[in-house]
Image 1 (cartoon, helix red, strand yellow):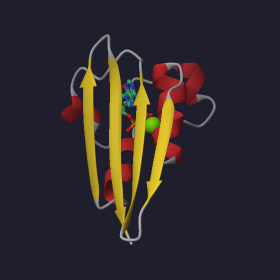
Image 2 (cartoon, helix red, strand yellow; image 1 turned 180 degrees about the horizontal axis):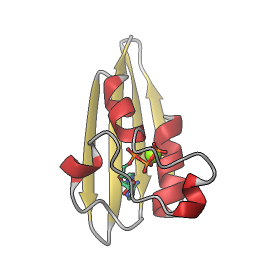
Image 3 (cartoon, helix red, strand yellow; image 1 turned 90 degrees about the vertical axis):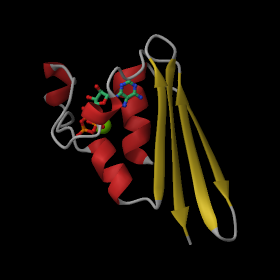
Amino acid sequence: MYEGEINMVIHAHGGEADVNVYETHIEIILKDKGPGIKNIEQAMQEGFSTAPDQIRSLGFGAGMGLPNMKRYTDDMNIESEVGVGTTVTMRVDL
Ligand SMILES: Nc1ncnc2c1ncn2[C@@H]1O[C@H](COP(=O)(O)OP(=O)(O)OP(=O)(O)O)[C@@H](O)[C@H]1O
Ligand SMILES: [Mg+2]
């Protein structure tokens, strides 16, 4: 969730997080009105990043956030439209 939040700060000028806690699972919905992701498959690859130098100097931009979010959740889905925004939904089973 932290990685998703930071992505919204760095890549999308902020956004909203909704967390629903159920007996069986936790659902996290991260929604922003940023620039959107042109190529989701590419963005999911380890090491791919569009973070500028200033952001890299702060320790971000390894291109590992999205792959790690997928690795550590039971389900993850990205919906994105260029110029409209991005919604990342994650599910963690309990
Ligand atoms: N919410 C978002 N809106 C627009 N683009 C995004 C968003 N989240 C991710 N991206 C794009 O996907 C790329 C890969 O994201 P990822 O989190 O894997 O790496 P990163 O944020 O660049 O670096 P790291 O997470 O390792 O600090 C980003 O560089 C950016 O181009
Ligand atoms: Mg990231």
